[in-house]
Image 1: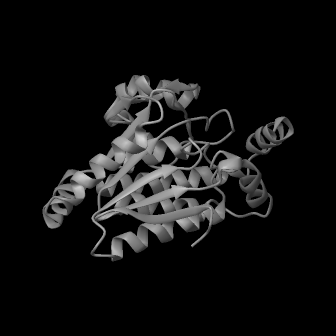
Image 2: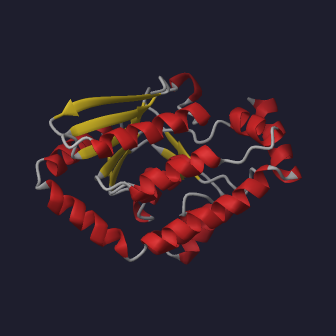
Image 3: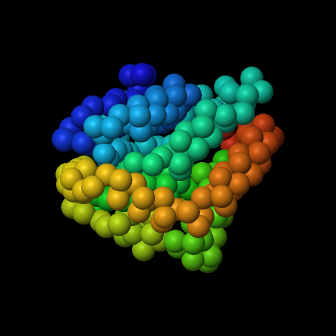
Length: 250
């Protein structure tokens, strides 16, 4: 498993999966996605694991896609396949996933929360969906799921304008369950993951399946459709110009 993603048992039945590129604010490159996919698959296959706790190292969840890595992939004519594979994995996981968010949750760092069963954000967390500003388009099933949890007007505001928003707005939009004191999101997430792990596992899995049953097909279709358009946009002149401007500033 990639060192950019760490996986460890932190309590009975709870595995903590940590995005671990703190020097890059845990920006996700292709190796990171592969590590996340492997961590979820390993947890799913282990009967001793009953809940997955997802977080980021260094007081930051994730700043989203590593633009340098994405630009290199686009220049090589590669699409975002490994990122889509990760979205497929997290959206279809049978075991409950609890997210603990501090610092930045940008792009896919926000959209992946739509597939977590529970999520808690520190009061200082900052969220953003900057797809349009980068010449891209929504991903992660967000064009379907965000209007469901936030309402169509709020979803349009967050996805089209792409402005940063705080933890309170994220809670109001249904992206997280609660805002907790800064620096305590992991503590709260672990407590809920431990509570889930202590419950009858088949009942937990069945409840998760029933909760997702009505939207599962639509989510899968939306992720695939978004991926097609995202891949096209990734190679567009608008995206290339936006990437170049971003890299020049960084």
